Amino acid sequence: MDRSDPPDRPRIALVGAGRVAQALVIALARAGWPVAAVGSRHPEHLSAATYPQPCTLQQAVDQADLVLLTVADDAIAPVAAALRWRAGQAVVHCSGATEVAALDPAARAGAQTGGFHPLQIFSDPVLAAHRLAGSTAAVEAGPALMPTLQALAAALQMRATVLPPGMRVRYHVAAGYAASFLLPVLQEAVALWAEFGVDEAEALQALLPLSRGTLDAAAARGLAGALSGPIARGDVGVVARHLAELTALGPQRVGFYRGLAASQPALAQRAGRLDEDLRKRLEYLLQARDC
Ligand SMILES: NC(=O)c1ccc[n+]([C@@H]2O[C@H](COP(=O)([O-])OP(=O)(O)OC[C@H]3O[C@@H](n4cnc5c(N)ncnc54)[C@H](OP(=O)(O)O)[C@@H]3O)[C@@H](O)[C@H]2O)c1
View 1 (cartoon, rainbow, N blue to C red):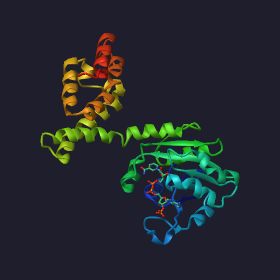
View 2 (view 1 turned 90 degrees about the vertical axis):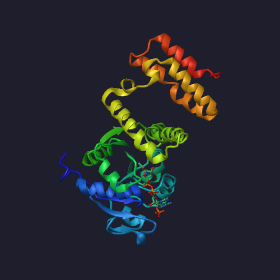
View 3 (view 1 turned 90 degrees about the horizontal axis):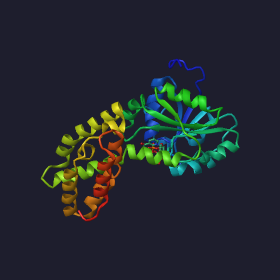
View 4 (view 1 turned 45 degrees about the vertical axis):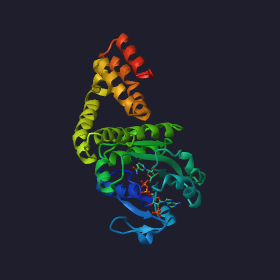
């Protein structure tokens, strides 16, 4: 697709003026699919420099061929029910967890409905706008709308992954594991470093290159190929010392470790690092409660 002049470029409006909206305004302008209007409950509070043509939610809907709902998840169904839609319009929400059925009021009015979930974090919308290129968008739609959503992803230089109906919650849990769920692991590491007097900033400076190295290895060699550490090496004695030390620090500490370690022996066996016998010994050690 020629990004400077997409063949079927629809007139786009956003409904909801939060962080995802702000990032999409920037990224879509750069992609040559500029946003025509951004609807908000409080358009008078929006800067036109950040949000093109701030207007009410209904005014945004009325002037668009493709409406992207960028409101909070709990607002998707009530907002879809409160607005007037027209036949032929496309109405798509940007949530990962909310089913497309939340847009049924628009579908009943003759609109095509779908989901376009950008798989990225948006805590900093300007940074997120840059990170969209190379990221994935999970798209869900019927056959009439799907090509438009795939073209939208391509315009943003995103990969499109088609999500089958009914899978959004599972998909969203997985996305959480790859994003915010990494943080409690680092939080636990930082807490252990605090016990020998290192503060969070210094601990993260030391630990994040290790995390990045692991993620780079996973990208290059897959999960099994990236696994390192005593479980991957079959160093039973080191794992036993870890468990004994954490048990002394308390049940939460050792429970956290056991939970994260439980699937590693099987992964290490898949990588060809452990034989069946050693995998079973490690699994037994990790499950045992008397360490
Ligand atoms: N943040 C992420 O990392 C991320 C990633 C991918 C997808 N998403 C999805 O993108 C969507 C928007 O997320 P966000 O991070 O941009 O949220 P956000 O920054 O909190 O913005 C949400 C917007 O929704 C509006 N809103 C809330 N309730 C409303 C209602 N009843 N009627 C009208 N507008 C209402 C808010 O308007 P007011 O300003 O008027 O309150 C706000 O502008 C969500 O579906 C989210 O799941 C988020």
